[in-house]
Length: 180
Image 1 (cartoon, rainbow, N blue to C red):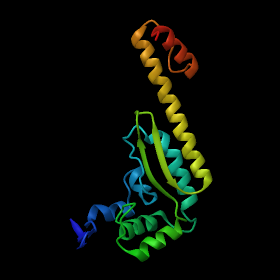
Image 2: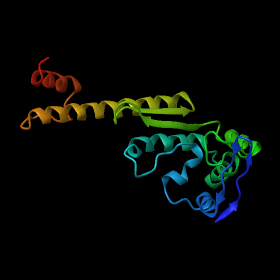
Image 3: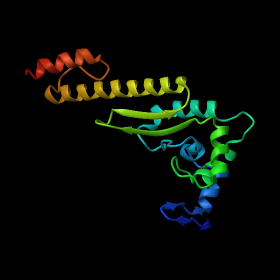
Image 4: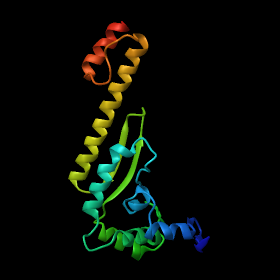
């Protein structure tokens, strides 16, 4: 059920605001709805959720003023930014939300070349950027070790090597099994 109709003016389009959008502001069902005012928050069904959850909670801790309830920030995100990181529905509400959250935002996260090559884009403090970098590095190294262990297991099913070994020892074992 549409509560507020979106507007179209030239190339600028705003989305329709439905009753479900209003419900999500006051009664969020899941992690994504609860923290959507921070930007691109991963849903709980994604594989990346477990590694991104600490970053989102830390960003919420730093971004949310102690005196301001979270529903206010979600309301400002919906009516100020159309629940988007690029669109602006109402400039004053958008600026108020950005001022309250100190400009902290999770702009994007994606896997690039491999399923374990995670990239995180954050607007925030150096501490948040360092945490995002650490998460990227850990996600990559764990995924790369698992990939090497799977390749070794394919070539030698009786191997003792698994993803718990260091990257160097896995590379050496793989080189031993597949001479170039």
